Length: 335
Ligand code: HEM
Image (tube, rainbow, N blue to C red; front, side):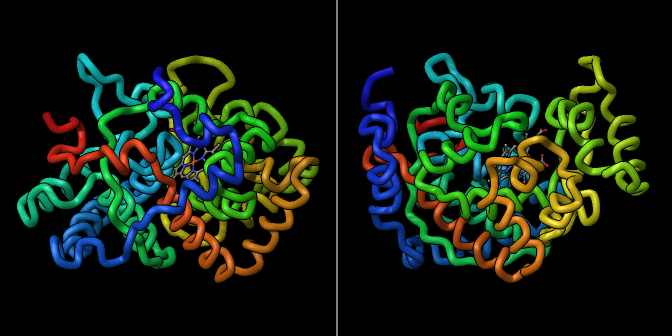
């Protein structure tokens, strides 16, 4: 990999500089006001159809946006298919069999190409779609700075290096957020996205055959016990066949964007190790306090989630910003 393919943060190795670089160029709220004034309505309409047909589509799109932004910035790189000359990110270990929602973005792109051809980047579409996804399942609204460009490269190795995983320790996950210019507060608030969507057995097996019983049950909580039995019936202790069996990450209101994820962590019923560590890790005094706060104050959670999503969406890839393009098909770079 040439040095120009590395993120500036990696080249300079400075967290402060990284944070500065990630927000310093000018995305603007009215970027498409003259060139594609209906962009927000078009995305909203398509997202309404998608979420109405299946609320899980909201979760797919939110996660897609997160996985885009953590790999060479929010530049639509996650949307690229493999070709002879380009290795996309879809088959990286954190994404394979897991990341979905690409067809929804294709549909929005097609509508926008009819409405205003060659104008709206796939990276911007994904950012707006993720915001709308959150609103459509009951979450907060926030305004989105626009003007991202689409990359002409993807970061297969970076996907595995930068994205956090279910059995990773709290400090390692925190350092991945800091590296992107996001704080511990951003990390905890953004983790609240796990109030919607599902996880696969592969990602919660270690937790349910690990410390779940000890932390959640406290010896005599019958609800936790029956919940654990249910999880174990979905996900047996061994066997590849069950790896893709799924269950909701929020066991109370799985299809609603609310703060019940944080209540669940306080009951020590977090589905994945990475979830429960926010509350239970001995190294997590700060994260534990934030979990309690967002459980007690839903509006504080919504406000912080909105602010943190804007920060997430502003992570920039300098290569893409200056040499990027507006793809006509989100899956392929323009010829
Ligand atoms: C803090 C570190 C994080 C870790 C370790 C993590 C890990 C995971 C894992 C392992 C899954 C299940 C994937 C599967 O089984 O197929 C998942 C699902 C999900 N994640 Fe995260 N995640 C993190 C943060 C985030 C953030 C910041 C967001 C968005 C802002 C997010 C949004 C989602 C959503 C919506 C789903 C459900 C997707 C679906 O239904 O398929 N996650 N995450």
